[in-house]
Image 1 (cartoon, rainbow, N blue to C red):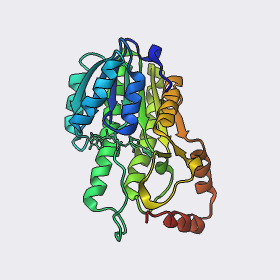
Image 2: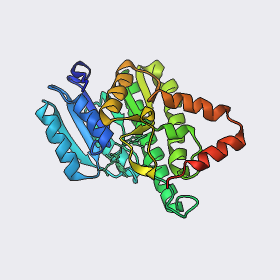
Image 3: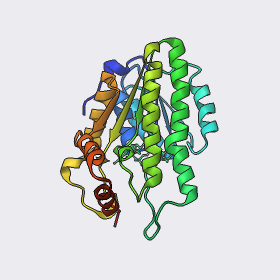
Length: 258
Ligand SMILES: NC(=O)c1ccc[n+]([C@@H]2O[C@H](COP(=O)([O-])OP(=O)(O)OC[C@H]3O[C@@H](n4cnc5c(N)ncnc54)[C@H](OP(=O)(O)O)[C@@H]3O)[C@@H](O)[C@H]2O)c1
């Protein structure tokens, strides 16, 4: 595991989705003596477990249960947590999804929920964090999107759409706040420890949790605007753009989970 204690020492760092696989791995990479971590998630037991591991590495840790389905509650929680300035924010939380077997598309309720959890809440949090950081003239934001943002997945329209919105928002926010000393990094992962979907994933398109966490932290610490991981997904994005429409449609439909 690559850690970067110097990047985290004496920093106050918010991580959403810290109870999850990628968020937890990122929390461990930011945990070091002097680092003060604010770990958000919904599952109290998993939050406590990752907090204990971060404390064992020397970090000071506070946890917060927060449901991003309620963006007002999330912004109120941020206002409380940012009374002491947040230096780095890693917005990792998100919900994966695909239409249930036999359905053409996700239900209307699920579409609205994903729009909230994967787009509206992280974008609102990022805007508020960026504003506060810009007022202080420094700060770093990480937004975890998905390579699905670049493909019109017919079986995961809400997921692909919510992550596409988040990607465009992140890119626009980066341009808006860069002159004010705030760095915004968007990372768009492909498959990370992926077992869903009922199809084998080619190893070349798959990252382990540790590989993904290392690459995400490397992009974030380098202040890269947008990283697609693994890089092969950047090539897939180009192929998607260049294919004739009918071929693209057939290919995307054929990828539906079994
Ligand atoms: N794994 C992949 O292949 C992959 C690929 C591309 C992008 N991503 C993105 O990477 C991020 C992390 O994914 P992961 O693989 O680590 O998934 P994960 O293990 O399922 O973790 C998801 C995290 O998001 C949190 N979350 C979900 N819904 C939430 C809500 N309504 N309110 C607050 N928190 C919520 C979860 O909290 P609780 O568990 O406490 O509810 C958990 O901490 C997500 O944004 C995902 O879209 C993952």
